[in-house]
Length: 238
Image: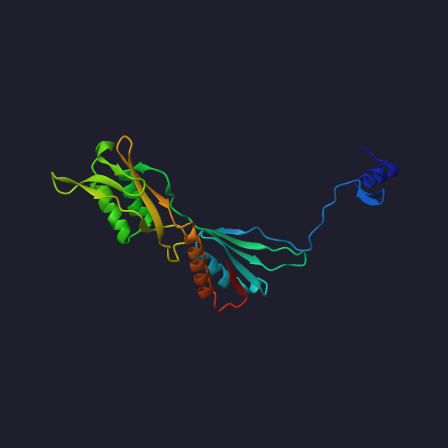
């Protein structure tokens, strides 16, 4: 379909933004969006700190003279640029740790609890104590449990046919997998509780107020600073 010169001019004018002055204030009759001066790439997603270090060392020359490695949380690290001419930062890499799930504060049957302790916690003295205790608890009525709100008693097997009462270990210091595998897993305090509900159920509750997160982030920062010490353009922050 042919369009006259006047019609084309009319269409062009429709697209142009115009400013209006009303009562001393300036308005525009269209939405206007600023076009950035710099192009930015989408972040590469990774799951290990080793991958981040390998990437940083391999592509150093392609990055700016100053780069930031930000420890966002115990499970997330980002490699970002410093401010560009648009006063914005480019995130080149996003690293998120793959952490095994564990239901803190949720009761589970004692067999599932034993399996979780063995597969999702690093071996230490208190883990061994809990495994031994949970493995010898008898599945008896709630009347055979004592609980004053602070300590608990449970009936345990003390031999092939004999049983006895024992104090439930509490609190306990455990080292679950909660951060990147390249760094030391923080050890922290937990409250261990048991209850009778169609069998014995166990649960652990975090009892350090989240202090383990600061320790984990410090461990990550120290690891990355050590691995990137020969590359001064990278600054690790947390």
